[in-house]
Length: 406
Image (cartoon, rainbow, N blue to C red; front, side, top):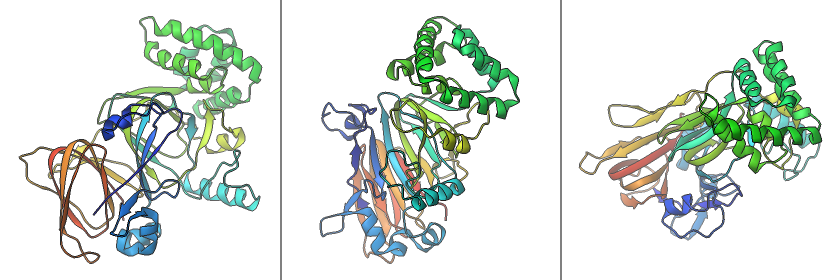
């Protein structure tokens, strides 16, 4: 196993303190949004195999079957199929959605054929892969996820008492659910920008009023008022009001499949996703919003999101159940006097300590290395374990385990 040196991405929405506190380093005063662990070419982790720091993607490329195992390479090709992150939102992220695999393949091929540069600001598809993801809260975590039922959204919009929202109330009642949601989002994102800016301003003030009163919409309206302050005049503020407002407690998680609109507002969590960078934005951003392509990708389905809680097996591994194979994520809460916790060895793993400290010991390094190894992970530290290595964990701490199903 190899200790990882990871990159922190300084996106503007990041918390200036949460990731430095996790890592035990002094804050710089700048936002620190995401700590990346994996082999994504945008910011691959680095490890030392004796000749100095080497990016993990280069290590894997030099020996895919040795690092990933033949089953993983056979299922996903010669690349690590997931990216693990610690995400720390100090302010809201963009409202966004991810394509499914067929949409990504078609969209990527089309933009390649048309010669759209990969770094063009209007490019939608950076690769041909889908991007399902899961976020597990490390702190109280606030976000938006999936469409609310149209009738409930109509009640919220009517309660705000803003005249320019009345046409959206009528649309919510005028069609069956999928059509109503499509019509609502289309109308919001296609509205005249000057008129919409005024609507957003009035709606933000109305949301603040409802947030200050007891009632069923107080908590959600506090979030929508925050969005209106951060993104004045942005149609995404009204689009966000079509979505469920949700709060996760530490240990709770959300799985986000293709086509599900979502936005994170505040909090820190462990995030895992397929190794893709495909994002279509719906708003809350100065970046490009491709409305026709977005409407093609979004799944217009209403209902409350399912909050995931880990299910423990007899060995104490707490698994977050997801319907895809590119990643499998679980948690081990270790107590000092407990027996060593074995970690399966057939597939590659990234192990991340988020609390306390964890002692890792390699009991069988498999065909790639001889002998054994051991190390201690402090908070925020992680390791890459190649396929075939048998590792056991002890200590007083929390360990997240990311791997694949192959």
